Image (cartoon, rainbow, N blue to C red; front, side, top):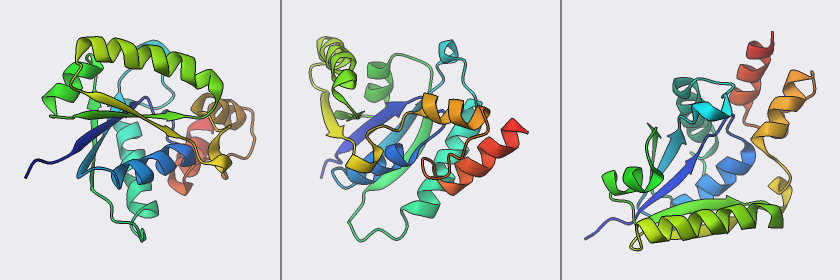
Length: 168
C-alpha cells in the first residue's frame, strides 16, 4: 500500500502553538507528515536550524503524545533547496500550508500556483488556522519576546524557555 506523504514547510522561527495546531491536524490526514524546516538565511533567523528542529521535535513530543485522534508518523527535517525538489526527494504528494487571515491567502495562492507549474502531481492543501491562533505569527512572537513581553500563550513551553534564555 502506498503511503500518503505530506510536507509542511516553513521557517518555524520559532514554532508557535498555531504551527502545532496545523501539524496535529495535518498529521491525521496522512501516513507521514514531514515538517520541512527551511534554512532561509535571508530571513535572518533568530534560532539556528538545528535549534529550530530540536524545538519542534520536543514540542511535538510534549504536546501531541496525548492525542485522541489517529495521527500519522511525524518527521522533522531541514532543507535549503527548492521546496518542490525537497518534496520529490521525500516522495511527498501534498504540501500543507496554513492560512491565518485573508492577507496570507494572496501569497500562498501565488506560491501554490508556482509549485503546481513546477510539479502538477503535488497538491497544495490549505488548512485554516484555528480561531485561537489566527493572529499568531512568529515575527510578532519574536518582537514581543525581545521587548520583554510574555509569549507563553503563543508558543509551546520549551520554546518559551528557549526564547527567555536567548534574550538574556
